[in-house]
Length: 117
Image (cartoon, rainbow, N blue to C red; front, side):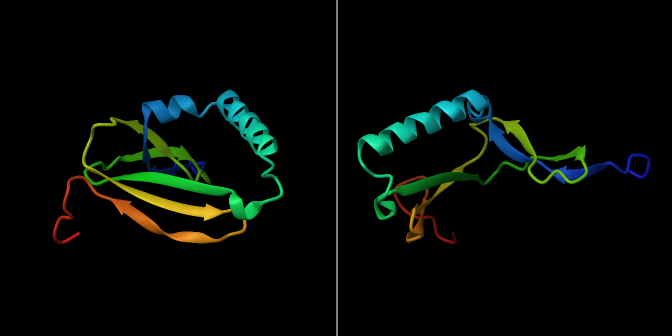
C-alpha cells in the first residue's frame, strides 16, 4: 500500500446477488414514485405518527467476507455472497416518522431458542 497511497484495505460486507441487482437508480426512483402516490391517495403525508418503517436485516453467522483493496476514503464496501451460506438470524426494527420506535426483535431459526445465544 505504500506505493499506492490512494488505496486502502477494507473488510467487505456480504450482499446477495438479488439485492445487488435490485439496487439500481431506476428501481429506487420507481419505488419512491409509487410510495409518494400511495401516501397521497391515503392522505398520510401530514400524519407522521401513522407512517412506520420496518427494517429487517439478516446476520449470517458463518459468513465472513475477506478484505478488499478500495480507494482511500471508501466507507461501505460490499461483496456478493451466496444466499445459502451459513445460518441467518433476522433482526427487525420499527420506527415511525415522528421518531417513536419499538424495541428490536430477533428471529432465530427453529422452534426453540438455542441455549447460549
